[in-house]
Structure formats: C-alpha cells, structure tokens
Amino acid sequence: MSGHSKWATTKHQKGAKDRARGKLFAKLIRQVEVAAREGGGDLAANATLRTMFQKARDASVPLETIERAVKRGTGELEGVRYEAVTYEGYAPEGVAVMVECLTDNRNRTGAEIRSLFSRNGGSMAQPGAVSWQFQRRGIVVVARTAAEDELMAIAMEAGAEDLRDDGAAWTVLCAPQDLHAVREALEAGGLAVESAEVSLVPTTLVAVNDPAGARRVLHLLELLDEHDDVQNVVSNFDIPDAVLEQVSA
Picture 1: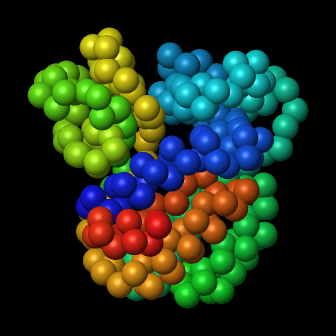
Picture 2: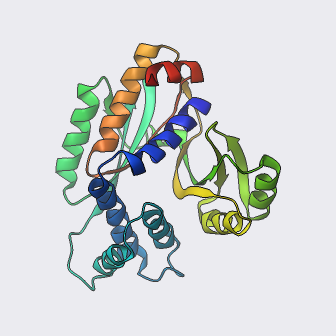
C-alpha cells in the first residue's frame, strides 16, 4: 500500500504547489458548486459542502470566490450546470483506475478520457467492472510531526478506523460521515492537518515491480489528473518504494 499512498500524498502536495493556481481553483470551485446544488448552501446541514468548502479554503481559494460558487450552486447566481460522472478503466500492468469528473458535456468528456486511456496503454471499462475494487472513505492527512500514539488516541476517539504510515505523513481513515468530526478533533488536539477529503480507497492492490511499467502507469494517471474536467484519479497500483524512487528520480 505504501507505494500507492505515497504517490497519492505527493500528488496532493504537488497539486497545491506546482499546478497552475487558476486551474486548481477552478476544480475546487466546481466541487463547491455541485455540492451546494445537490445538498443546499447551508454548511451545517450539508456535510459534502462543508468538506468541499474546507478543501477549497485549505488550498487558499479566496472566501468570496467560494461564497459565489455556493450561490451559483443554489441558483442565487447564474452559472454553468455541472454533472458528476465517473469513468472506470485499466492502466498498463492491469492497474484499475477510477476517474471522477464534473462536466457540462458528458459526451465530450467521455471521448477525451477514453482517448487518454487508449493512447497511453490503457483501456476504458464498463461501469462496475472496476469500482468493486474501491471503497469510499474519509481521508485525513496529518503532518509527520505528530506522535503516533497521540494521533491514534485522538483519531480513534473521534471515530477513525485506521492509521497508516505513508512516510512523509500520517493518513487517518474513517467513514465518510465521520470526516468532519475526526478533523475537528485532530485540530483541537493541536495536530497539523494537511488535508481532509472523502475519496475512494483501493481494497485490492496490483503489484508493479518493473520500473518501465511503473512509469507508464504513473504517466497515464498524471495525464488524467491534468484534464480540466477530472476532479480525482484513484488507482490500485502497489509500486515498491525503491521502484517509486527510481521512477521519480
């Protein structure tokens, strides 16, 4: 699991630093709009909106920009209507991939995602062919400076189910509905929360031990992640740390 977890954590950290800020903001604002449209604009009553709101704030999206997105979602302001759609597929080496999108044109987005898969050694799959290998969980990334025993005690008391050591950070897993409570408890305990979101987590893993194969897998995942309509890319590869370091060098 360590290879996959380290890549996911690194991707999140690089996203805030390296990706064009406007592009990152656009993705986060789109998530806020959809959450507000589907569950209303009240943060207290809409757990999904609360999570997306905080995710945008963590990325330094201006508060006024987020509030306008909420109003577009609730219909107070005019805006584009986005639709959530998830595509399933396989990367090279038989790695399962879930691609979560928000789009205003399902046909265009579907064709572009299919092209990225087919042109980079992967293939699209039918709905359900891949999703059974993943489970939706709350994921809280905590700075490595936190002591394991203290972190575990606080997290478990708040409803967390698992704690994983991902090298550069701790990853706390919980039920999606417990995400807000776990984050609040950790922050109240003085621990530095780097990110908190609800996402898919692989339940089965595919070992990728060949550096060339690992490069092909990561290249496709990065291309998918860079697509404007893609909000999240999750896969079930397990690349050993030594191979991952070799590929990243």
